[in-house]
Image 1: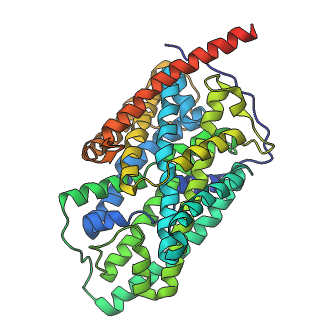
Image 2 (image 1 turned 30 degrees about the vertical axis):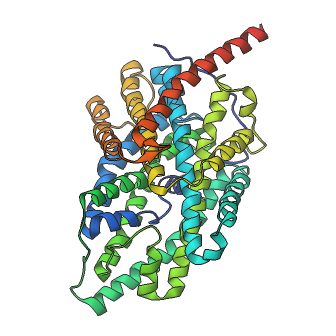
Image 3 (image 1 turned 180 degrees about the horizontal axis):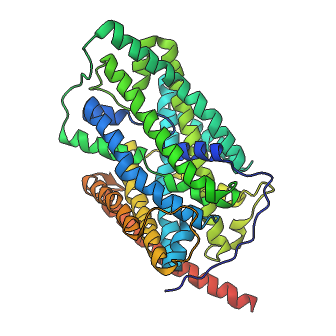
Length: 450
């Protein structure tokens, strides 16, 4: 099966996305700070939560980073993972990769306005009542549209600023927690309530979600400075920073001896208020709202390049590939934003379940592309190589096992009045249908041009 390689017209950019901004944008595509791991603490307890957060990078993030490092350095093209799968497995599977990723984005991107609203509600509850909550979510989407239209470097630079703003309150929280543990509680550390099997499964699912999305930065490859060198470095740098920004605050509040049996989304503010006062609690809440903005903004940059390259390959109408003077596919930005706005107001847990199922399927295709390209194109220049052939094959084993586990434990979650797994399979099955439609449309357009 041979892939049809499409030569794309290079876009003109004023400047490129450099290493640190790329790593910062990747950080927000994956984590966005310790916000969101509260359900891991409440579901698993201190010790198990810390184990989950330290093991998952080794068996989930690190193999994925190695795979992305090799493919992004070998094929640094706009569209990233779509291009890798298309080249390795052909147009059909390339389309499925893009379809799964875009379908997952509908549910993934609905999470961040929801997270934004949860923290804003803790700050000023009256602002989020009734229609006001929807208005705030839509305002976040509009703000990110305007930000993205300024280009990838603007998103990367903004991610660096948000990184500092978001983690500064946690630096104070860690210091206050250590002081509290040293001077007030002595040996009263690692205290937590009982942990149920269901709570532990939820903690693992939330952990997987908090460590996924490493491949998203690959879609803006032509907008990155020296991508062959900077992509692998950005992957490993952001992997380490994400793991540390999760584990250090967790270990600190454990050392302080705080009871986290009721820890849920937003409880970092309660811990901050208890340890340092209401001012730090307010700072944490503001940071939590901003993390929703930062993650939505960075991921918008990633996802909107997929419709653009599909249009350039003739699988979507060509007008979707239109770019502004910053090289941004502005029509794709507007269309994706509209779709994400329509997916608001699902529950957080349901969003995570369906997001993991769809994203997991696309990630498996990327691991397959890594191996297939080793066989089909052994002479392909790979500035970064993820070990030998056996290593390349082994890299996908644990991530695939975790994806299967996530699908199994979320089998009872409901989405659209059916199990989340069944819903995910229906969404995935629509991919071949739309591929067939795109081929028909492409054939008609070619006939008209003749």
